[in-house]
Image 1 (cartoon, each protein chain N blue to C red):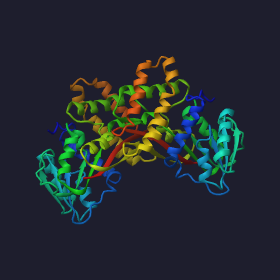
Image 2: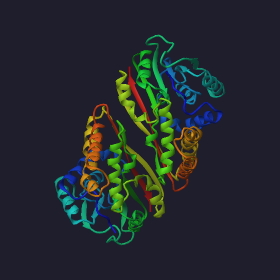
Image 3: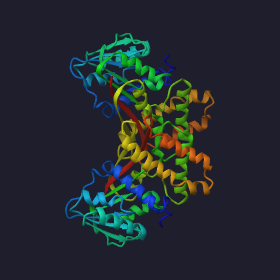
Image 4: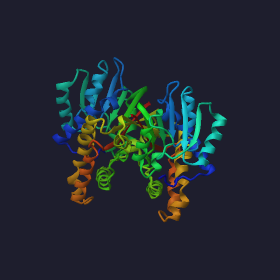
Amino acid sequence: MTTDYVHGYSTRESERLSDQAATLTDLLHADTRYPAGTRVLEAGCGVGAQTVTLARNSPRAEFVALDVSATSLATAEAAFRRNGSANVTFRQGDIFDLPFADASFDHVFVCFVLEHLHQPAEALRCVRRVVKPGGTITVIEGDHGSAYFHPDSVEARRAIECLVELQRLGGGDALIGRRLYPLLTEAGVHEVRVSPRTVYADGSRPGLQDGFTRKTFTAMVEGVAEPAIARGLVEQSAFASGVRDLYRTAESDGVFCYTFFKAVGVR
Amino acid sequence: MTTDYVHGYSTRESERLSDQAATLTDLLHADTRYPAGTRVLEAGCGVGAQTVTLARNSPRAEFVALDVSATSLATAEAAFRRNGSANVTFRQGDIFDLPFADASFDHVFVCFVLEHLHQPAEALRCVRRVVKPGGTITVIEGDHGSAYFHPDSVEARRAIECLVELQRLGGGDALIGRRLYPLLTEAGVHEVRVSPRTVYADGSRPGLQDGFTRKTFTAMVEGVAEPAIARGLVEQSAFASGVRDLYRTAESDGVFCYTFFKAVGVR
């Protein structure tokens, strides 16, 4: 049921995800803390970009970090041996067929996963099954339709649309952030509260311009040049202009905005 | 130098602006407080939608609320007599030719004004002239390119683009929010800090869906139907579909996002 992972599994991609995690840690994680002794599932841990932060912020909770990809899990475990504490167990498995009994976790955390799935609401139903009554489900997703910038650029917008289109062709949804409330509600999750988390980078924040505008977002767009051109979504020169215009928004008089959405609900 | 005011001067428009002010007061104003005895210019007070809040939040500061339109000023003064305190003087005048000596105010506040001007950086330079050294300049603007929603709709996006295009034809810029940092910096304002203020309305916040999605944003788009169709920007039926789709985003499974930008800098 999982889809082709649009960003691929290269080393550069792993580095990009680590840069992204460093820049965004506070924005996305600061208000997630799990009590001592609770058992938490991270469903879809990927290369472990969020796992290190999760485990560090809740050092006395016990995490099970699950992913469908053995390659990603191996990367995650290696990173964890370098940076992590001892409260995480890694496990291979499918979010649609979780190898756990009903109500076997106190909480579940799902970050940058639903955007890649054909059936995100079904994934949430599967996840909900393994949470104890009263436990929480936390979901974080981006939304590429939330990206806007100065100077504005038709080609830059087109390059971003290529990424959205590729993700759609792979069965995912790069505009899923805005849909978290109805998705969780539809999956039977209660008391859902969604908060937007906007990354705003202007010339007064050169570190954020570098860490996010250049190295996270634009690098991600740049990374799909080959499939976007191969599938005929865009001409090579137009895509290159779009990427150049995105880098332009990280100069001292440029501005870049992007919004993540964080949802927390109760089983 | 001022432009045609795209939203017009009708009674319904005055009511829309009052609804908007009520819903957005906290989001936009909560962190603006002027000390007792300071003299503050509100440049471009319009119908006084922000003036009442400004004056109430800083009851011991003295405000001068200026606008180029005598009609708007009359509405503002009438509203103020109903709701306001005694610390505001209204005055007619042009932001590009302010009837005040250099450095005659401690602070200046400018809200939803620059978007309507041909030369927003020049307006900021004019405003800066009348602020004392060390005084602050606060600017708030929206950005219609920050609007996105669920369910997504090509027609709804097109209807919003009509509003952006009409404002551009009138010499304004409905996408100005994202540009506040470079604009203020270019105008010689120092230590500029910009913060995005996102209105996020989903089914858990029916009051916000009603007050903002329906009565503020969609009503504003709906309000330009006539000029948008008259100028040939869109077919009547497509525009009507777009407006219907915007109202759709205020239902219980709909989501609407819009971002304002607030900048504070030092003269």
